[in-house]
Structures are given as C-alpha cells and as structure tokens.
Length: 304
Length: 248
Image 1 (cartoon, helix red, strand yellow):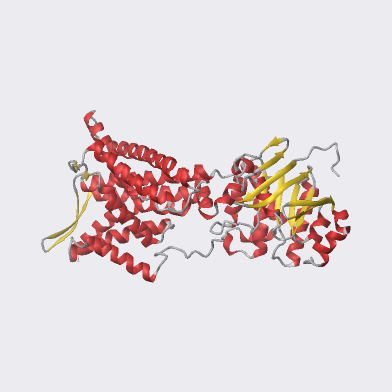
Image 2 (cartoon, chains in turn green, blue; image 1 turned 90 degrees about the vertical axis):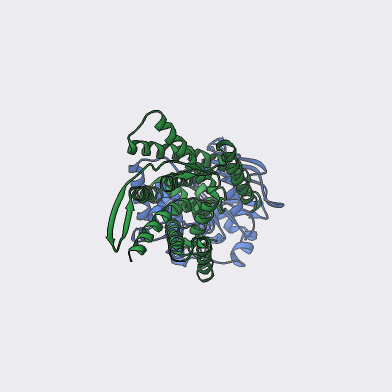
C-alpha cells in the first residue's frame, strides 16, 4: 500500500508534465487540424532555455531560489513562445492551403531542425544540474518504507495546477479564448465575424509553446537534466496522451497525460522498467480500439 | 431604377468569381442604397450565396469591383470587411455549435469595437425581436431547433450593429409561422432602425413582397431587376419562381 501510494505520487508528477505538453498538441490539432510534430522539440527548447537562464541568474549572484524559479519560468515561457510563433510563421502558415500532408511533413522537418540545432549549439551530451529544489516531507512510514513527497514534486504539481487554472480562464472567459474556440469550430464564420484567423492561430502556437516551456522547466527541476533528444520521446508520449484523452479536447489532454504518467510509473514499479513504453502504447491501442475518439473526445458529427 | 441623388451603400460592378475552374459569378452588377431592402432571387446554384461570400472575399473576386460606402473593399481581408460593419447570416446558419447562445451573440458584438453599453442595448434589441433566444441563453448553439438557430444567426449578425445586413435564405427549412416571424423582424428593423438589408431567397413571393427592389440571378448573371412589385408581375418571374416553384 505504501509502495503503491508512492508510485501514484510519482505518476501524477510525471503525468502533469505530459499533460502540459499534450495541451499544445491538442490545441493545435483542434484549430488547424494538424499534428505539430515539432511540439516535443519545443518542450526540449523550453528545458534548455530554463537551464541557460538558471545558470545565468546563478552566475550573476542571485541566491533566492523562489525568485530565481519565477524568473526562469517567465523567461523560458517568453522565449519558447517566440520559438513556437516562429515555427508556425515560417513552416506551417505558408502551407496552410496546400495539400493535407504538407504541413505535417514540414512539422517533422521542423522537429529535426530544432533538435539538431540544439545538438550543434549545446552539444550532444546530457546536461545535468545539481538539485535546485531540495527537501520534502515524509507522509507516512511503516515497515521501514517511507512515502515521500519531495518539494520538487510539490512545485511541479502546484505550478501545473496554477497554469491550468489561468489557461482554462483564458480559453473560457476571455475574448482571445472565445476567438480560439470560434476558429476551432468554424474558421470561415469566425472570419465573417471579424476574427483575425491568422493572428488567432499564431496565438494558439504561442500559448501551446509557453505551456511546453513550463513542462520543460519542470522536467529540468524534477529529473535534473536536459538533452537535445529528450523532446522526441516526451513528445511521442504527450501526443499519445492527447490521443488517449481525445484529440481536440483540453481536459482530455490533461487526463490523458495523467493516465500515461500513472500507467508508465506503475508498470515500471510492478513489472519492468524496460517495457514501460510498451505498456503505455499498448493501453493506447486498446483504448483506441474500444473508444476511437479517446476518453473525452467527441465523434465528428457536428462538422458540416 | 436607382434614384440618381442617392449614393449606393454597396456598389458591385462586373464582379467575377470562381471555385477552381467553375465560374460562379460571370460579371455581376448590383447596387444597394442606404435604407433599402434588396432581394436577390434565383434557382439553386445560380450564384446567390457565392455573391454574398465574394463580398466578404471568400472566394476572392477574379475581376470587377466591390465598393462599400464609396470605399473599394475588393481585395480586403475577410475579417477587415466584417469590421466595417457588414454582417452576414450565412447559408446553413453556421452557429458555433459548442458555444452557448450568449457566447454566439457575443461573437457578433466582438466584430466591432463597441462599449459595454452598446452591447447591452444590442442584446436588448435582439431578445425583443426574438424572445425565444432569451430562454435559451445558456444553452449550446448546436442544441437549438432550426428556427431558433436561424434567429440566433440573425441576432448574432445584428449584434455588430451592422450598416448592411445580408441574410442568406432566412426562411429555409422553417415552419411558415416561424418564417413569417423572421420576415416581420426584418421589416421592423428596416422601418424602425433604417437598416439596409440584402436578402437572398428561393421563396421569391415572400422576399419580393418584403423588398423595395429585387434582382433575379440566373447562372451567375443578373437577368432582371426592378422594384419588388414589378418583378412579381413579370411573367418570366412568375413562371420560374412562383407558379412552378415552391410557394410561401
């Protein structure tokens, strides 16, 4: 029971990171109908920018950890958002009215560009950082096994919840969010009502990239390392999470992220670490056979 | 036909548009004067809906000119045209199905920069015209009946306080009583607020009785024009759109 509780905590933390990335996939799919294969690499870029800005802040003599974390968070969100905006502008927008596969091929290309760029600019080695957030709490201890909740885990989960709250408010209550939903449901009608569709699509990429940057920073805090290739596996997992939750559904992306995080962690804990990816993807296949639209997805009946 | 003293609000000259290789508009001339209701009638596939969409730049005009209030809007982006306060209740209504009725109406108001007070008066006017919408405010657009969706589409267009309102087949698929309600609402808007309206209809009888002037469109060309009553008396209109066709 203790062991199980510990694994659930770990799974939720991992799931939060996947969920934050998955939102970017699902938002872009909802609004432009393409899978942004470069999104995992945007997450990786976010991790690197978090690392670089952290090192810069430490080297100029800043010591207050909460202040450092806040600045790192804002800087990596802002710069990564710029990456997201640029990728859409140069690689996807010119192809929007081209044949259906064109933006997808371009996205795969962008994925290589971003990861190779990081490899060349930052080197191929794994970049470790010393633990930034230390300490934690022992929730319960018996038979020599302690259920621990580390401060780093608390930071990951709390940051995720706060950002999701802001994000949900943005989508459901603001003008921009309404415009995004309008573009998702009927782009032509949105334009007939004065919505600048291109700008709204750009903003979707900006927001998705900013959330991926948060995930990248959380990954850095939690695992204490980044490398140029980490976007690939995490991206595939988060994409799986988005499909599992029902592609196009925002709550679905978060739910799918948590599900993949939990499945992966529990499988590693009870069966084998080597086969954790097999477990995650097998569950995906099983769900898609019985629930083709994912957990919270809706069947495509409303489209005309 | 057009009184020479008034300057048209919308002026279309030699307009051509196509979907791929299929030419849908083959040189259309049309004027709408301020405060007028103009009906555009014609059979299915004549190009009526295409004309409305081409005014909004979708598809883009291949040739010709569209002027709104003296300004050339032919090459403008769709959303910029909408911000000039030209509103459309399009073919198929195009309600946002997963937004509430209130949000659908807000989307209409967003088209123009307007104050909270303007929004409130706009909303008041829409629910006075269509009291049914008031009861449905929190409901999702996709769950409304056909008639309610039509009311919502017109209401949404009105929320932008349009200078020109374009309605594509507002009576299509509606029960006669609901259709009459909608025509009454259009007449009220025109008389009380001086709203300029372009209405596309297959239901020629209703539309021509409502309109000050009308145009008949065949195969992407305007073949006849005149006042509503003149057109109703024309034998070719009677045989093509009244006696043989659907009656109101």
